[in-house]
Length: 325
Image (tube, rainbow, N blue to C red; front, side):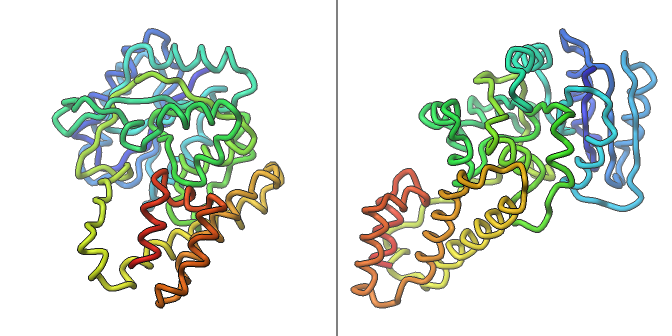
């Protein structure tokens, strides 16, 4: 049985396009479970109208209070009956082969509990811009090779590359994943699913675009705008606290992630070594002395140990920044 878990919140504008794309699947789904998080537009009206003629059962649940996307997806997944569950945003559009290709992957890889795919980026007018979400998050070929070598967790310790809108999971893994944690910064539902399963090498990917992923001003979650590089002149004159703030936030985020994963009985603890090293690297960067001469030793040590790769693929840029800013 195949379920679709969709969470909605004031999504009436784009919802019909997503719903129609689910109907067009070459491999039909068996149920659509929708959890609405307190919409004030006509989202529920759109859903009820769709349910009257849909070729599969549609369950619509209204939350009495707003839960937020992570907890809303949690309850939505629990309501699904299918052995395979597709996570579904309210504003994207699936390609006709999405379900068939994804199910075929999971059937061919019974050891995997989840899989994600690439997607083309589209705007609020349903126009694609030629880019993909993997380009947006820089999930490049070398990272894909590492992933296939069983080192996906090392990639995710640096940043998340999978979005729930492209993901399907097996119901059997929910007992390990739920309840979703909410106390670690940036660790929303799809990030937690990906991270937890990667540590068991139980999540794979399909290197194809199987949907259009909408990026627009009203979306609840997304990749957000890319951070523009800081110009050299600004590096030399900006207040040092502005530089240190995001480094300290990253250290705190990694610390929370490390503590959370240490508590999970299914996590191989030896795989957390790089996460711990990454946390310590950012803590070290955040506590470098104001005197530039005194920074040379600790910065050089982390360069030689390869720890600046935790900060960037272009590791020399943060290293030089730590020396001179």
